[in-house]
Length: 624
Image: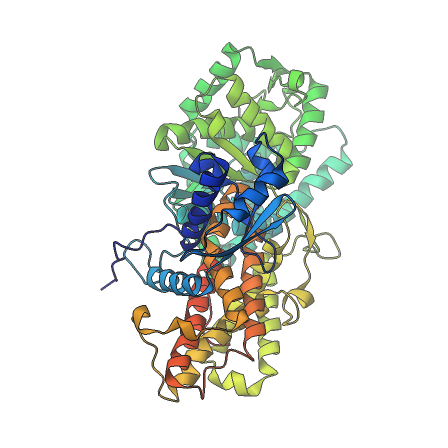
């Protein structure tokens, strides 16, 4: 049965009590509100726990004089050991023994499994209680391979969903599949020409991709031989997509089959990446009536205009370059195409409906946002989409705002930079499955170099796969998300430096402590009150425990900037602190009480590192 969290232990971080103790004395000395004093307490630099910059309170007296007053009136207590002045700053050091005792007790107790928090609640808070966020991420195009751009969106989106949940929000993980448009008419034409039921059953996405490539080659040849003319392949594709929009049963059955097969294959990749979704949506599921209503609303707001043939060609080319979507890129009836006039805001004139009446993806996005608000009444909706689509996102956000939709202030675009080095020399995008296999094989080779440790690994295949996943994710999340980076298989699978392999190794090493001391008959005590933390006098312990106690703040800060690198940096900070403590914080062969106390530190460290890794959607390993 899952443990119940004691009523005496709340989700309030342990360090809040120390901040409150500082704020209480500040408030009295400076005659300022307690809340203002609390907000003025910041983390200090190395060797200092907390720092207060007196000028931030904007008081009449000189900051240096006020800082002197604060220090002269300081009174040590159970929480605070000392206060010193450094110019206009006041530095505080917490009471070491109380800090170690209270921090470790909270970590240990809140790391136990409960019904609401299977992996423990340490680091979590209730700031988002009662609120709901939709996070749209991953969103691959059906019948096409899962590529690098989708990988970044998937990794960042999963992190954000985990992060919001850790901050008390209810998150809806939404996969908005690219499953509509003229390209699916083109795919249907290709399948009629080159499709194989046997190949489709064996590897649906690979076969559909091969079909799509071949029919595109047909299209390119026809257009090259007759410049400016419509190709037969293009005409067939448009006709088939028109049938889809007109609800032709036979055409939709084939399309649905492609969609369902693609989702099955994608779910295999998602499972491997430790990713899940609550909703598989898609452009196809946006109601046609709502799209027509959206068109009418845009028209009534004076936002629609007819496009000339030249404008349609230029706009469609730009749209395809931005999104990779071909469904705007047609010349027929171009002069009759309807466009969204956003030139006043320097956002161009994106086409929303072609001359033949078929819809464009931007219209589906606008209507789709309206549909989601009707269904979920969300408090926030986040689109995790790469910076190559910044213009598109700005366009449909602006359209919703100009339409007067009540939820526009609840929309956010979490952008990210491009991954370089994920294509072949011919410029073709590598399949994600191939990249993951390469990462797995690289890790397996690394693991085989240590025969002794390999003996302890019960499932080398699964372990190397998990370490490989960790390497891919950590390389992606180490840099600020807005920055592009170069995919480097050799570097990311190394045990040297801050890599995913090193991070998993740090966790495995913490797990090994318990296994090794168990050989000596040392069984960890389950009651923190039976552990003598006064024996933990090493400076390395204090530094490590203070870092562990700061984890709840890391979770809060990450939510402010939507930055996975904040948590990644924290994981490596903990890993480095543990690494530097191994030689002095020895457990085996020590007196019983000291061994229990040191083991307690390592167990709490493992709990926190594991929690931070899970926040990053990593699966902490116990052996490797």
